[in-house]
Image (cartoon, rainbow, N blue to C red; front, top):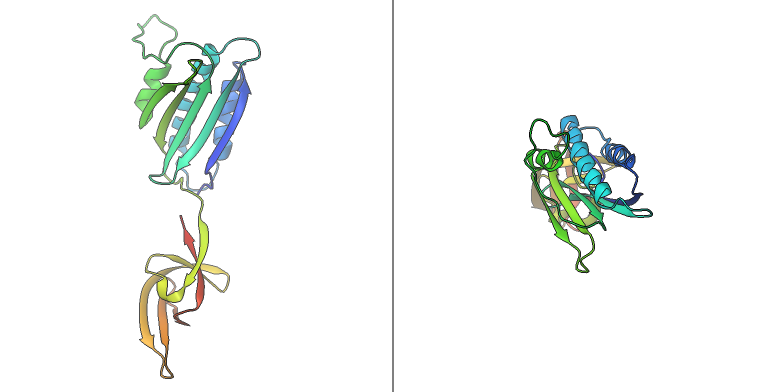
Amino acid sequence: MAALEEASFRLSSCHRNAGRARALLRALLAEPGVDHESVDNAELVLAELVTNALRAGDVPGSRIEIRIALSANDGMLVLEVSDTGPGMPEIRAPTEEDTGGRGLLLVEAVAHAWGFEGFPNGTGKRVWAELKVPGLAPPATTTSIAAAAVSAGQRVQVRGEWYTIHTVRGEPYATGGLAVLLGLEDGTLLRLPATEPLTVRTY
């Protein structure tokens, strides 16, 4: 799973930078298990947003800002491109003879959702798109909790290895106090004091 949370960078107003933005996105998503077709779609969407921003901000010294993030709530990849150029995005209806004007049509067809907002000062805008990328998930973090507080389905660290908990059961010690029996994915039954700290993964 990819460990992407958020990445932001700036590019100068140079049309070659649309390709550079695609390469940066592919590098960020280059993790085992990530769906390749979805990565291709994300690259396409980002390239179109960047190309439009470069056209809007095509003045000497201007820059565009790109933000790539993963929404932890729903596993959605969020692509944002900001520029300081005039005008707002508008979907066109090009004819067969037209050589351009299809960028936002592609974005609308590929993205789960997209939109834009102008900056409060009236200069420039932010255009965003959301895409589902199977296999892409927020990075795991860890926390320490008492054995009595863990639950089935959690990932727990035991002797330096990670295991999924299948069952949790409590039973009293003969000498007093409470023990917790954890059934792990490999069939191991782990007996621990209820207050024993365990490292578990959270997302």
